[in-house]
Amino acid sequence: MNDHWTGYPSAYSEAKSLQAAKLSILQAKTVTDISDNIRSTGKDGIIKLSEVI
Image (cartoon, rainbow, N blue to C red; front, side, top):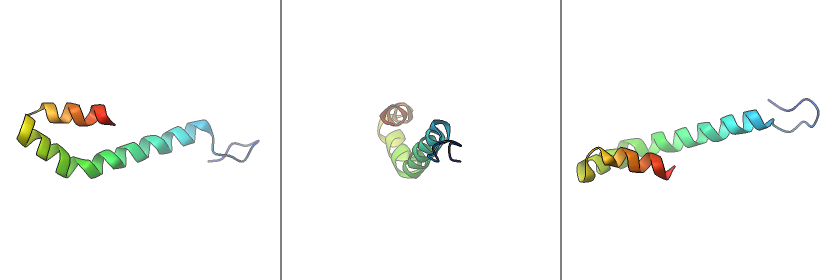
């Protein structure tokens, strides 16, 4: 969705795509990293991972 006047993506859609990118990174890490963290540190692993991103 481009801004009507400039033709560039609006700040809103840019923010949405950044949010989507963060979510996909988090999902990619979820299976391996969070399960490893839970094994080594307990539930705190999830908090640490979410603080990183």
